[in-house]
Image (cartoon, rainbow, N blue to C red; front, side, top):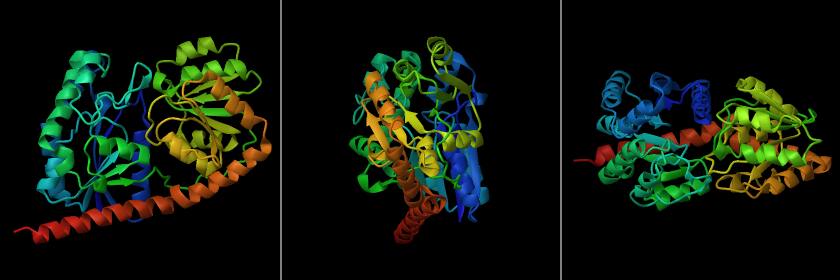
Length: 396
């Protein structure tokens, strides 16, 4: 099978878990004999500042250059299926048309909510926001939700409105992959036909092996930005002074967080490679995910399950269904006391930690291992290609 893999990479200065998922799925496919034809763009090529934001929002409506280039690549390679991940901003949903014209079925993984949310997070002013689900995104324009700019947001609104009018998502995508049931429900509420949505979580292309959790520290991995709940995390550590915390990641809040935690047992590691993340995960007593937005499916959860690491996570969005009682503890999002209490409770219970480590490994092997991930992905590909062949054969 030949798979056209379409993705717009984020800036290298602000790496995204989406990028890692794309790399992982490509590795998974190629290591199992599939031919992958990549079609990519990189946001490092865009200018910085408002000029870049405005250009991004406008090109997101319809990128004529990307559509032309994709048509040429399809003609040269004749893929069996096209798997889109991120089209924002340099590829655009207009690229589906190139696949449709060539009879190539389209699969779109829904990593975020940008289809109907200008900032993609369903989060405004630090709180969950669903104002634009199922309607024209005028609230986004009022609040300047993209980059805090009404001008830049106007471009985003234009793009989403255009594709809503054209019925792009209803008519040009054969199958959507939502990462959780929670996310699937939001897209269905916006008008995506439920029968076209498959729920499939992220998987790993290899088994990193279980750890023993004897490093004696708590681990956080992710961007140091407001929606990730990192302020709540650091404030909670004023109540957990005897427990070491390692923070792997970088972002706009790193400097103020380092100042606020100068007298706390917190170590900022900055950005570290995936191999090092897995080492840290294997040795961590537990992983904490304090997010205050509707996370898609954080890759670190799969890595935690794979290494057996128990998880303390905010009780919000898809995290609610991903972290069951056997895998960790959930706490109210944004609650300093709730986060501190959950961490302290697990830290003091080695028996519970041991049971969770075993349960997480079992869940990884059952749901998120390379074998499970490949099987679920190929099932989706086979279904859409079969349906497309049948539709083309039935056409007059």
